[in-house]
Length: 293
Image (cartoon, rainbow, N blue to C red; front, side):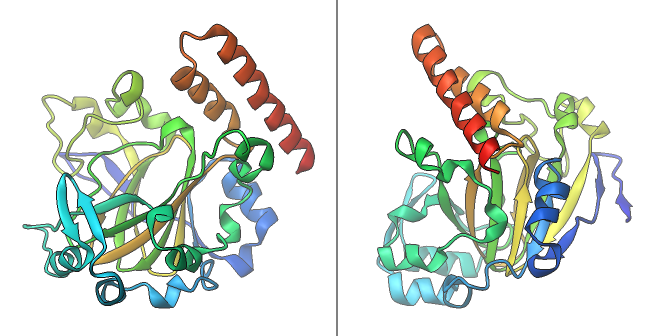
């Protein structure tokens, strides 16, 4: 495993574990990656999706070209967005549609990405005890062109896991484990999961001198692959070729404690009674799910 070192930035390992789902199996996957919060790429996990064959840039343009979209405050049709994505470059990246709720897509498209691959489970957000109270599950769509970047280095809110399923194109991810948090220049309060470092390739060393000491991973995600980004892992991505991605968030035994704490602090701050009742309920769900494993 090679290390790519830069004088002006952090060091990156240039590899990540990859496994065919049929080879690794659920028990080993949970034992070696989910519970220890270790990122991994699963191949051949989404071959059952209709979207795996159907969802291309041309498909969206031809079949859903009139669909209205808003990207960074600009109004687009799907056709216009796809046209810009196709000619996107690193120097002039196209607008990046990101975190678009799949539930806003036409129903026939929603069914194209169901059921979720086995590697996104166990996901306690799916349990009826939680869903009848609040739906924490977010399935989201990303469409972008060469050179586009996710706008911020971050870990997912409420310490949820992220699963990113690549359908078209190639993305390059960088990720830093939670023990690198002191070097990430995190914000405060609602921004504690977002880094102030605005350019990981050429960081402003006067503002972020500690960032040069960070050690992380840099790797590519290809069509048909699913990336598991564990709770608390800092990450961001740039697009290497016109790309379509679907993501889902999740929680289980590995991150339930941190999720419950974050939720309590975010939604019940200043409400002692609500906080106590809600905390007890989340604790109860966690106990039920651990017994049911």
